Length: 388
Image (cartoon, rainbow, N blue to C red):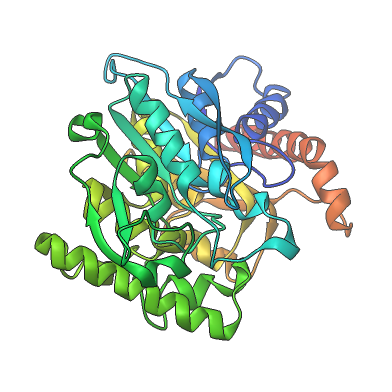
């Protein structure tokens, strides 16, 4: 019996690989002879580097970069393992590692000045080390600079009305007069950039980067209005110099990560895609699931939003394609969690056995997963007995 275990992480409790290991331990108590295939998963957000490095037996590279408010920090990206399908170096980069909101103390959060330059420095380092396929995860950013800092780190020249390099941050975009990408890192011409994006917001407007995400990054209502106008000005300058980018500010996902979605698509030729789709291709999930008897997935919380591009739904889609039954385990079940059952999920199980605090649930995640997995395996074994 081949059992594929393909979960996301349980945020703040266990990594995707640790979740998979716990499920395997529980199942082995009942089915010790089964063939277990563990495929740590993610959907482009936090934990994507760890999941993809673990799934492909890759490695991690630590680099000193510029943080969101100009301080020097250490950031990490992943180099994916090579196989018959992927022999060239591939990198997985989470922009949050270099430009994340968690890097800025609450009192210092100010999207007028926070910059995405560190993300560009990570990309540059990967290019310098021969990477020609980058998967870039957008999410958790501290920035609202439209990716301008990232572009500058990669060699773009952004000038203000005094012909000086544009200052850092989202507010400075209102002073932009020219964008020159002729000196971008030469390796970008041969590099495929796939962007894992799980939001559909445009760059500007009421659903844009500033209005939807600016407040959580420290923007007041007055700041939000100014930042939105600055992003609109940025897009207008880019469109005036590069007519092929006209209209890309309205692209679904252009507003991701403070507008970095717009920058990577319009000026780096990147492609936006649901994060879980990029991950499942990169880790060759279809190959793992083909011929399996059962697929087990899961994440920290399953609710009505899970069907919209989260890891369990992405795994379920592949399982459905191969007509393999799929079951999900979750730290907790939220409102409308049963929506995923309507998509073909055979069953969903919460792992918390009793009413506990969040801290207790996070601390006991591994034990709860092992116990729930063992109970689930026992039910399956009982069902096999009755089936005979």
